[in-house]
Length: 238
Ligand code: G3P
Image 1 (tube, helix red, strand yellow):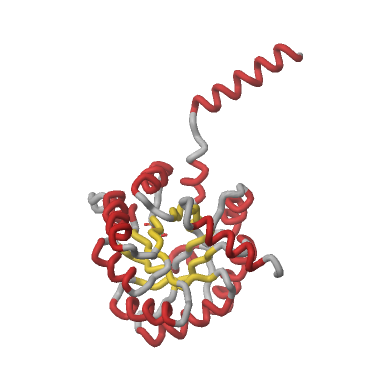
Image 2: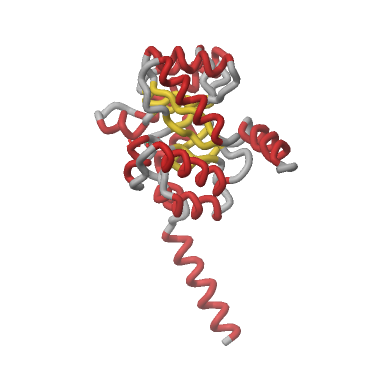
């Protein structure tokens, strides 16, 4: 526990420099695998991802968030989403989630009461992730309310034949021009290409399924080159 604050400080400092890699899942094996790769900076979840893992009931949900926080370790943000849609409910739920573990960031939907809740959480130093963002206008509102993270859903924008990556670029330009401190967390990432494009478009964080992260590894010339190196070594050394 003694090193916890130093780890948190270092992590926050690095966050200012490099694009962060979060994993977008509630699957503990996937989270462990990404953490073991040594490149994991945080986790995002949502009610659909929790349901997909069969996690239901208040106690089980809270335990699952704690388990995720323990796997990723100090200084790695874990987004946990509120289910309430009214201000009072979101605030009560968000406080309970934030008290669970130092890593927890309260995920709040981009609706009127959500903006109000984010502004309130900002006032009482609870970190937030504004989710279900699909426009630059919504991004401005969330930043004005002091959201720690903003989650534009690029895959779902692509799904309706708009351009998710252009949305990241537009928000990035606005945030730089206006000096907003909210971090752009490119969400609903489906492919390794989305990750590369998000990096070029100015995302501060990408949250991706494990398959998109490991997909970055793949190149046929790497595989052919390695096979040749090993074959040459075998020829020379028997
Ligand atoms: O981070 C948001 C994400 O979980 C949504 O992804 O693929 O359901 O649009 P998707």
